[in-house]
Length: 279
Image 1 (cartoon, rainbow, N blue to C red):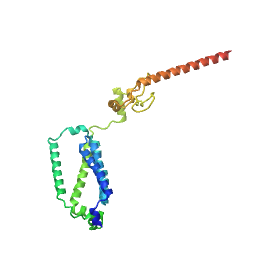
Image 2 (cartoon, rainbow, N blue to C red):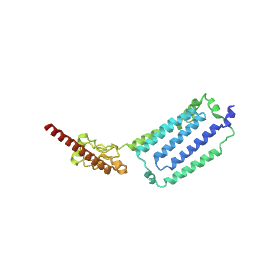
Image 3 (cartoon, rainbow, N blue to C red):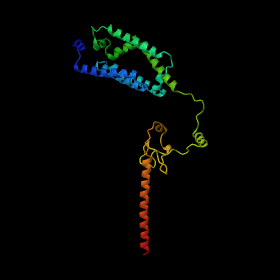
Image 4 (cartoon, helix red, strand yellow):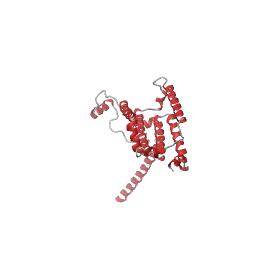
């Protein structure tokens, strides 16, 4: 029965393969076509998760968990954090630090594709043992993988671990900057601000005296004009600040007019009360 099951595919397995396989291929293509390295890493992480689903569906539970925990959760996230720390942008991909690296990468990719096609073409699909026969040789899936990792592939396993450690150390070296002078204290920083004539007290909060207190709305000065100190310079350079100066001035004028009218009414009522008291 296990031999017959190995050669047959159910409708659910077929639907799962074609749906998730299509998404995996799209994610792999996006990995090499995306302009930003962060987006490429996220697409590759999605492809790895789909591969883990394939492993779990075929009974390779240990490999599926390792695919998610080790490759997607550790290695890919480490790569993503390294990209974010180093600060790789889309502009970096347009500059070749080594001449001919694009042609060399294309040649390596073509060679790997040829080897992959040759290996799949020469693969024998006449006999399919399945996981049951492979796991029964060592008493289980985990035991069989452990026997291979720590006997036949022990050197490849250790070399892979050394490469990962080297990558982590390299990331820390790239992000580390040697300090050429001692760190200045808070007193020294405040004295420097006084000497340079910068804004000494804390900056005012955004939206002060305005209708809203959002970070993208500048605060208003007593005369109704917006203050540039109340908004972040990053938002100002991006052009993401909402201009409420005209609306704020109109509201301020209306508020002053209502205040004057109310004060006038209160003054008139006070005068009338005073005259009645004299009578």
